[in-house]
Length: 248
Image (cartoon, rainbow, N blue to C red; front, side, top):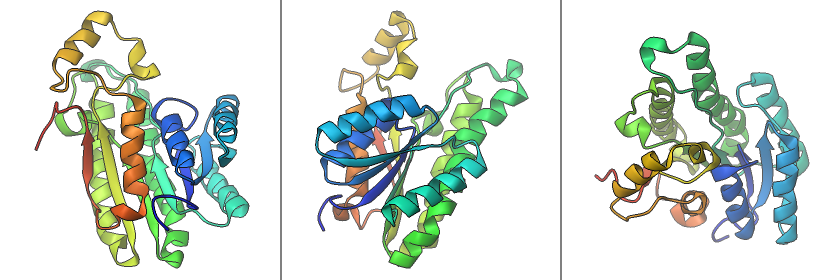
């Protein structure tokens, strides 16, 4: 089986942005999609896009900050598809503020969603992957988990932690042909970045060696590669998708 054809992929945060792009690209490659997010209406729209392309998918409402919803969601996906081959931990939130003013609730929400959620999801799917002796876990982290960002101590900490989780879990499950990797996007045009000022956007663009901001599809194609059969000898890796802002 080449690429991702016939694989079952669970994508969190699939209702918009990078998660939606990942779902569309994986579906175009022949994977069956379990679309997971909090907003069921938006998920249905993505499902309609996939169906229009001739793809197969199902919608599962899930808040990755809620352990019970994760357990119930993974159980429902297994009941519907019979297996989970690929997990894309994409769902994430920001609650930006200088650390001296950051509320504990904003710290907890970001860490619970961006780090504890992927931990719980990975834990929930790893059993079936171990039994079938094949799996792909791809964590969507961030360049700010690698270089930090003022006003984002919570977000940067969660994404740095996700990189550590990626490498540690990769070592635990490698003997069963399960790979665990991360994709670290740089400056990507999404709904999350659209609210920023044009001045800041232009400043960020000029810092990119490739001379442009990235797209959600740039990230999605990297995710698809790591999910594929061809990436079977890559694990514990952080694939930078940043236009050259951070090299080495």
